[in-house]
Image (tube, rainbow, N blue to C red):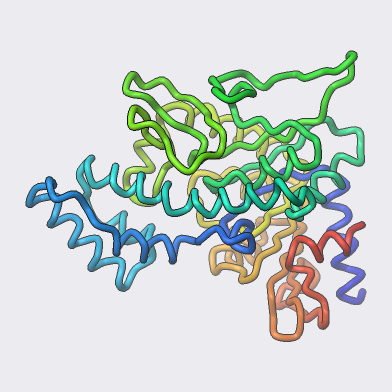
Length: 340
């Protein structure tokens, strides 16, 4: 079978089963959200408080040395930082990345068709489905913006409104008819999540700043994330993400590198236990993703990445890859043209 027809067949089979959508950092990069490389450089150049002590300064110098040769995750894993430095990293990360998220939000207010995710959600809801499941380690709100731009509800574990409180998944009906909802399980937190001094968690609208009484609830790379994700709302969010993955009939992974230890085991188990189709769209397939796809643990897959002449396609039938020239179907907007 020629590679285009093969790609269409697997892609259409995947999307017809209303897949769980897994969003990695590569899904946000085309919209100006900086990745871990840029964040690492920004953190290394940030200025820490003069009040920090000698031990803090030593830890910070160790981090700046490590980030010269290691990725951000590895650099932060190999150093021990005090609570004060961890707080600095969280706040600096929030301020740096949130500004890019706000820029996307402002664009969407004038152009509700800006995000290809919006078109994807509309396509998947062209069925009997009343819910979609999105699982992501990203902090940004692109999935929420995309859902609401299409007129759907976006649920992240909190009640709707300006001051969102923790809430069960709402069953929204209008005149007895279930309303379509995109559940976004943000396993590493969100730019909208904050915690006050009493430990109460709230979800707030997009903003360029936050009260001094609050702390951003995002899990940054490194040792700290293993401790932080045992608390709420991360524990409940992870449980919901686990259920979504365990029940998935298909997976559509966008810009995901298969490097997240929280999501990886269950996703691999689900693909290995039965013939669950998986489609991966990304600019560059990671070594970890290649390792998984070639292991035989994914019984049916289609993985597409950028190549010089168009798109390189990998599948069970083409494990060594084959070029699809003249078409950038590794990009979500072009992929949608393939399946619609």
